[in-house]
Length: 398
Image: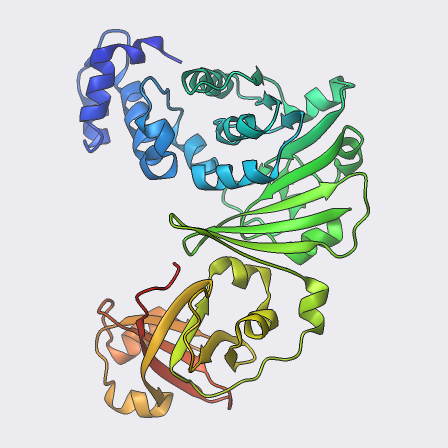
């Protein structure tokens, strides 16, 4: 960490060059004594990434930014704030501290937070920023989290862990693909705390994770807008649980939408009625789709499905608080009928339970992207292929 970055003229330069060409900047002659242009570029890139993801870090003077990858991998402020509303205790251990965003938010709701990070430079940066942001109840330790657990006999109220992918390019569908491997380490972790919270990547298979983990009390499937951000598994090491509650969470600027259920409840729910398109079309939020509460969406909101495996819903009555996108259906055709004339030449194409993906449909029917309406290519309740033109209902929650 280069302290010369905090000189007023350097800070002014960073602020004035947020939209500059970084490659050209790096190739220039050194602009400031004692600071390389590469270091300047890292500060500029880091701050740019923070503008929407971490607005507090972006807008606070004297924040030091690490390499861009560390910021891209950390929690957003919205998800960190949500987690801090759930995760709290007298003493909390963040085993994989990273840029320190989660630890900072945990410090608002927990009496004492201990942050662990094996990358010494990143730990120093996180500690500096926490001091700048006024968090005084975080202890920073530059050490591997599991090594620290093995060396310590201390008990914790809460362990929080965010395992990373073992192979950066590999998609993570199970927790054993991550490091630390919380499945193999479960007994060790459980012996040191009352609660374990595991943050996982959105692609993780939830049901598979539930078969591998023990005593999971709840799973939180978290989206910001319609982008699925993370999964959270809560383990109570002191209480057995065979039927955890699944919480679908949509974080918006205006409000937060929740939907809670169990897989047992979904399994025993009555099959959804399938019908022809009606007045309104409902596309569930990504968190609801990831969680797999397909029958309960229909049951709780009084909706009917287009097809058992087409996870789109319809009704003649508008549902104001539906967690997802709501459309007004303007027209619908059989796929054969649509293909004869292609009555819509520009639209946002969406393929659901349909043999062709969007790019292939656009190419085949010469449909350009954009416009004020969407074309849904689906399998309908009779098993036939159908196309619906729909316009976004103005007051959709996402």
